[in-house]
Length: 415
Ligand code: LLP
Image 1 (cartoon, rainbow, N blue to C red):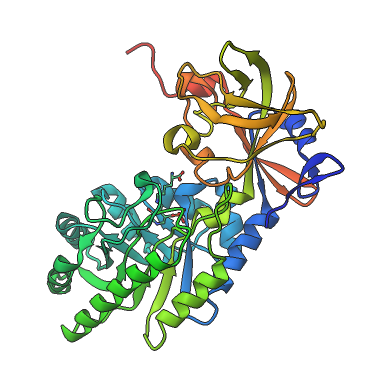
Image 2 (image 1 turned 90 degrees about the vertical axis):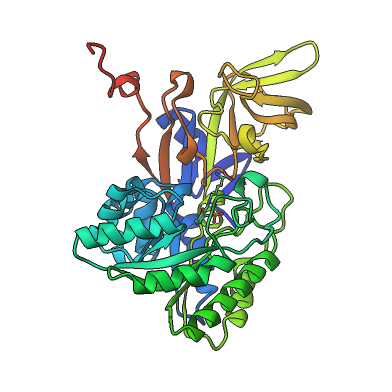
C-alpha cells in the first residue's frame, strides 16, 4: 500500500497535490512519501519480530540523506557497497554497528574508512579480499569482523542482470571453498569470522529461492560448527520484489513467517538488506509532456524526463505504471513515452495505452522510489531532477535540481 492516490481526479502524494508540487519544484521531479517509507519499513521489520534480527536498508536503491535519516529513525541499519555509501549512511546518523559492507570490489581506502567507523561486518567475497582486509586491519592495529558471502548457486528467477547467486555470477564464494576460507580467516590475526552471507538477486517474486539459499547457508553453518567455528550472524541479503505491473510478490509477513520457521532453534541474528521493497513504491517520478508527436508508424509522447532520470525501462525493459496527474477522461491510444535524449533506447514506456495527453500536461511514473534517482546521470548534459519528500501536507525539497553550473563545477578549462 502506498500513499499516491487519486482524489477527485487529482493525484495526491499523501495530502499534497502532485500538480502543485510540480508547479512549485518543477519537472522532472522525484516525489517520495514519508508515510509510505515508514509503513514499508515497519511492515518488513515487524515480519521478523519473533527472531533476533537487524534490517539494513540497502543504500544503493535510494541514497538520499533525508530518506536514510527517516529510515534510521525507524530503527534501520544500512547495507553499503562503497565508501560513498558509508559516508552517506554516517552523515544520515546511522549507527555504525548497524552497517554491513557488501560488494565484490572493496578498496583499501574504503576498508580503512569502514574500520575507522567501526561497522558491524564486512561481507567478504574472495580470498584476495580477505587478505586485503587482514593487511588493512593489521596496519590499523585492529580486528575486522568479517562474514563470508556464499554463492549458493540458486536461480532467483528474475532478470539476468539482477541475478547474483548463480555460479556464473561474479559474486560470492562457492560452497565447496567456503569452509577452507573460513579456516584461513579464523587463523588470521586481524580478522574475526562473525557471519555468513548471501544475496541471490533482486525483484524476486517467490520465496522458494530464498529458502533454497538459506538451506545452503544452514548446511555451511553446521559444517563450521563441526570445525569449531561459531558465527553469530546470518545475512540473507535483499531481494524481495514489488508490484510494478501484475507481479504478486509475497507479503513481507509471509516472508518473515517462512524464514522464522526455517531458522527455528538456531542461535543466530538474522540480517536482511531490503531496498526495493521499502523504497520502490514510496516514490514517483513526475514529468511534463513536451509534445504529442504523430509519426508515420507510431505515436510518441515526448516528455521532459528521460533515460538519464530513470534508466530502468531502457536497461532492463522494466515496466513502470503511469497515469495522468489530473485525468481528463480522454480516450486511450497506444504510445511510446520517450524523453529528449538522442538515443532510440531513450524511452520510459513502449506501446503503452495511455489517455491522449497534450503538451504541458503532467504524467506520473510509479514505483520509481528505488533505483530511480539513484541511477540517474547527467547524460546529454541534463541536470539531474529535484527530489521532494512529502510528509502529510508538508513537502520538503530534499535535493535541489542541478544547475548548469553544477554540470561543470568539477571541470577545469585551463588545464
Ligand atoms: N544486498 C545486496 C548485496 C545487493 O546487491 C542488493 C541489490 C541488495 C541488497 C538490495 O536488493 P533489493 O532488496 O533492492 O532487491 N538496479 C536494479 C537492481 C539492482 C540490485 C542490485 N543489488 C534495478 O533497478 O532493478
